[in-house]
Figure 1: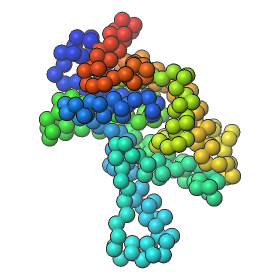
Figure 2: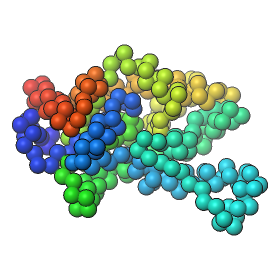
Figure 3: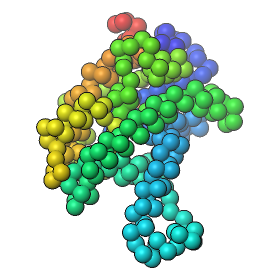
Figure 4: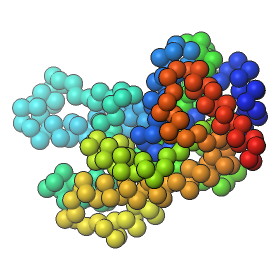
Length: 284
């Protein structure tokens, strides 16, 4: 760890963390608290994916849908209108819509082959966005004068790394430049997370072997895409837990989602991270 004790963390003139864990447990909440204090740069991986790596694919998909409407098609062909996504830290709906859900096309689903293709695009984009972290640390300091930096990773980070591989390029990059911090949930959080996902799906990236197994068991051309996506997300919560745990054990620290929910300002976050470092040092 780049901070080997709570004191070294408190004394560090440059505090840098990477938050990871299931979507909905507080990563973006903490990042926004830190950003709002005026002394932290917030680097959102999902925002970087949507605006830096998949923006052309998202734009093309929007235009493809618009071309089905004759009125819009005429205007697009003459460059008379502009169509584009409005992705923000808080609104990732254009990215989620592009990734879609596999299943019955009459219900808005994608053919599984197309869904798998978009998953592969997302996988590559997520890896690249994570590897961009050192570049954004430098940009934050050089352009904006921020010494403190929070990398707000997507919930899918555990799907694109091997936490048991000491040479994993993504984890090695994050750990060399930031302190990886796992926000750990409990079984009590499962139903809340599933309900939240069903109401407003977040961008999801799955390991091919996990996705293929779910599709072989529960999928099909006539499956309801929303039902399949929600059931797969529920299973992913359980499947991801040991992968997150290995990331924290081998590369960083753990804090509890219940404690994260109580933080009010940057001082609270700094204290919470210090406690997590203390726990990691005492229980290596």
